[in-house]
Image 1 (cartoon, one colour):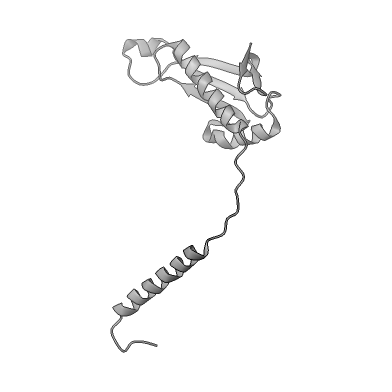
Image 2 (image 1 turned 90 degrees about the horizontal axis):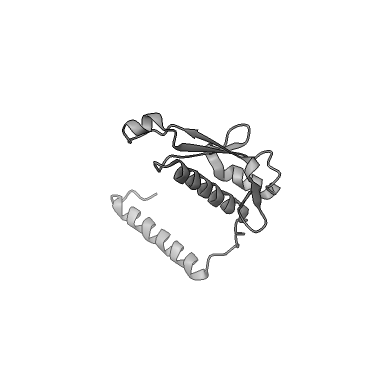
Length: 141
């Protein structure tokens, strides 16, 4: 089975490693004995399913969720159910990879308009005049 990210990117189940761990936080006795939180691991560095450009963007988007070895680790412990946490982790992983799959928009160079330049210079003159008036008379150099 594969996890379909975009029409071009599909990640096989074998590349995702899930480990169930005990969740922290409230939940009474249940939280102390049930491993409902999930830790999803994905090896970004050596995954054959990702194009190189997506891999680079995913590494930068992952931030501190990426280990030195290039493994992405997502933890989900929001829900009390193991399956809901598993679905949550996979959904967050899918959103992250989709975001990385979208190339960033190119910046369009713009130039300031004549009116904005004139407003900026007028503001500079007004500020300069305001500060000049603060000085006591006769201290002009």
